[in-house]
Length: 428
Image (cartoon, rainbow, N blue to C red; front, top):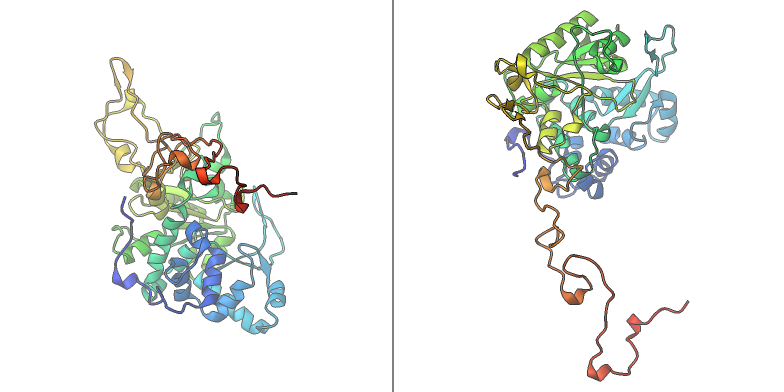
């Protein structure tokens, strides 16, 4: 399968492939990335490197290098960490700049419960370095002015949704293990007898964070438009932020506050357009910070799940089923399904009963090669990779790969002579 990569010249960074890369940026990229390949070796060609070079000054990199990934620090704690290099006033200036750019997030402490904001809870501003995705890659692209000023950040975002999964597809378990997004439903009417977790419903989150809800541009739509690979959707007000993230996005100029009713209007418009509601829960089961209303044609998260055949990364606790007796073949389910699971004209059943269609095996059931394709299916009668030589009888392996004791057949001139030194057993 060919690699998906954009060749729009505007989105190529002048820092890509630098002959003498800045070691500070390399070190910060190494700290943040979750890409298996670049975790081993970051170069100036790595998107983590040139993405950071596009956005951060060396002083900002110095601040970030002294912070642990996704660990919260108060300003006083950061002053102690940075005391040798920056005065408090200068440090505050750098933190404000980094927050606006998106390499740093901040909140005001955990002051929410199931009933919403805790009254009179003390608010202490805390800063942390975020992941690339979800995190700074989106935040770099959360302003149209920033994308226009730094077009390479659009390509950086696309790369950082694609590359981290490239080498670990077969290791992603059912449920996604925290990778990717989580699809949640918009309920029009909830049956009182329905047994489902309240955490699955958008209304639960909107009620919990009421008063701290914002709306801003969709980073996927905006960045992929820069890559000339987007759609005709307006980018504004499709992403809804909640809780501390809502306060952060408003204060850094990325979004504006909205009411719960306006949020529901956005969700309904998304439903009417066939968009998919997704959220993350990387901060714990009962804490989210964003509801994305994703167009299936350009959403980076949905695209990655489809490309690598990892639907569990994006799935909901609810699954859709066709009720045969109610189906009139209107085609709306085919149009709206984000994974292309339905095709108009499929026979739902025959005279012998329902038809069982073949399903593609998921990566947790079979080893998948590069880009999600099964380049070398497991076969006990041959090596897993055709470029490896077949074991010879003298190599100590049977043709099926099973081991056996090595035998030494002494030649005539070696009869009665001791083994070479390298083969003698070591005395304890």
